[in-house]
Every structure is written in C-alpha cells, then in structure tokens.
Length: 373
Ligand code: SF4
Image 1 (tube, rainbow, N blue to C red):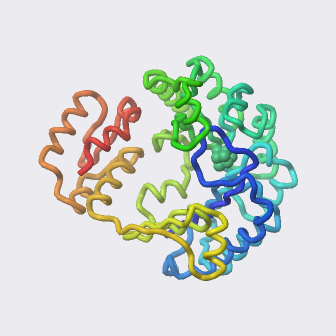
Image 2 (image 1 turned 135 degrees about the horizontal axis):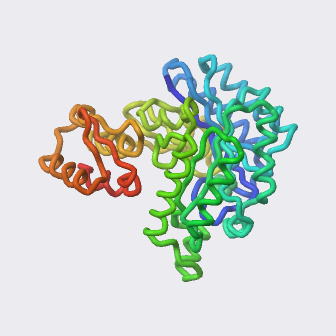
C-alpha cells in the first residue's frame, strides 16, 4: 500500500516561522501550476508499480486556496490514473480563514474525509506575531462549520514554545482546543529555521527564543493535558483519539512508499528518495517540456539504519532492534548507550523493542543522533 502527497504552494501571507515551499504571488500562474500537477500525476503513474493507494494528502502551502474546479480536476486525474482503495484516507490541509459552508460541502462531496486545520493559536497577539491570516474567532468557528458539513475526522495544528508564552497560557490554549471536539492534535515546538522572518528577528536580537527548559515544560504540559483527555501520544508531535491516528503520516514513519507531486514534494520507493525542484516556474516548465527537474539520493545502509532509528524512536511503536540489525551490525557501544538512557529514565528496551519514555520524548532527536552510525 502506498500514499500520494500533493503540494499546493499557494499562501495568502508568509508566516514568520515558515520554511516550507510556498508563494504569495501565485495568481498569475495558478492555472498552469494546477495543470502541471495533473500532468505530473499522469506522467508518474507507473512509479508506484500499481500499488493500491491507501492515503492521499493535500499539503502545502495552503490547499484550502484551491477552487472547487481545481480540486476536482486534481482528484479526478488521480482517481483515473491510480488504484485508490475504497475508504482511502484523503486529507486536505486548510487554514481557518478559508473554511466556510460552501467550501466544506465541496470538500466533503469531493471525498475529502480528513481535514488538517492550521489553527496554531487561540491568542490574538500570537497569531499577529506569527503573521497568520486568521483571527481567533475564525479558528473557533471553522471547526463547527467543518463538523456540520459531515467531516468527522479533524486534526488541528498548534504551536508552543513561543517566546514569552507562559505555562498557564499554553495550558489554556490546549484546553480551548479540547473543547472543539476534534479527533487529532498536532503540536509543534516553534523552531527558528534559516531564511525565515523569525531567524532575522533572532539575528537582530529583536526577540529571544524560548529557553530549552520552557519548551520542555510546554511539552510536558501538552502530554499531560492530552493524555488525560483520552488522546494517545503516538508520535512526538501527534496525538489522536482511538482510531484517529493519521494513516498518511504513519505510513511515512513505517517506511511505506509514497509519491510526491508538485514543487518541492518528496517521493520514496523503498530505495531512492527524490524531491522535485522548489521553484514554481521551473517546476511548471519541467513538467510541460517533459523534462522534470528533481534530485534524488540512493539511501545507503547507514541512512536506512539512522532513519529507522529516528522515526521509530519518535513513535509509540518504538524501534525493533532486529530491524536495525537486518540493516547493519549494531555499533559496539550500542547496548552501553541504551543502558545509560535507561538509567536516566529516557528509554526502555522491552522484548527487543526500544521505546522512549515520556521524559525521553523531549529529547528524541538528540537521543537518536547519539545512536546514529
Ligand atoms: S505556515 Fe502554512 S500558511 Fe503559513 S506560510 Fe507556511 S505554508 Fe503558508
């Protein structure tokens, strides 16, 4: 089983922290870009070697900026050229300011059965600071609108670790989110990525990022509040009610094959990882001339070992030691390192599977890096 990711590189505004590929001046070529997405879907239809498609994910950018005609055009091209399974999970990322009754009806009728809504915060000041295009009122109202349209699987994104965000304010944000009756919450710690407005502010000392201690405290509050509310913490940044784990993202973490369509989209076929050019005009030109611009890498055994370790440790499924051994012999000091992690209370080795504890999850990336070959 495989998944298809479609990248829609359109945004109304540039959020201060965002390093995804997007453009805010897309109107002049939006038709060409949507046509190129359809064309790429057709050109690459043999890439997944007729594997059934279990998940489709519209990410971005802002897929909720697609018109009804554009969305249906892409989805029907996909369905005509791929073996989409009955009951496939079809997710669309949406921003609150794009969600209204007519759009949600269109989405539901088009077969979108999961919405991932970029709420980020319920605090006006924070939304303005992040340069988000929506208000707190829109964030709250949009979920009811989507639920009324019959979309029963809704995820929201939240951001924590903002400079000056107190523990009380963060706890209140989570409690407000819980009142919305959503099935899935993704919460990300604010990170300062290069080439963002945020990184310029940090360089100019206009702001001081939150300390590691505060970010750790926010993460602890997040786990406490959501687990108490019945959510399962199944990946470092992701929490779901029973039966609402994101199938698309989980398949990435489990090493499934996926096809990425659109500028900057990544694909993986079990051996090679490839990624399309992160430039809209060059992407369109490449598809139209049938000379697509992309790069690729063959995953070495070391890459595969490290990836299995990192993705496994970040999830509730942990990392099976036998899987690591099937890729490469374990480094000599491996079990000593595990023992040290167990002594710190950060990890547990149970029946051949290495898991992080709640405390260890705060340091998942660092722990994985220390164990990399
Ligand atoms: S966070 Fe989302 S809406 Fe904001 S610039 Fe990035 S892709 Fe666009």
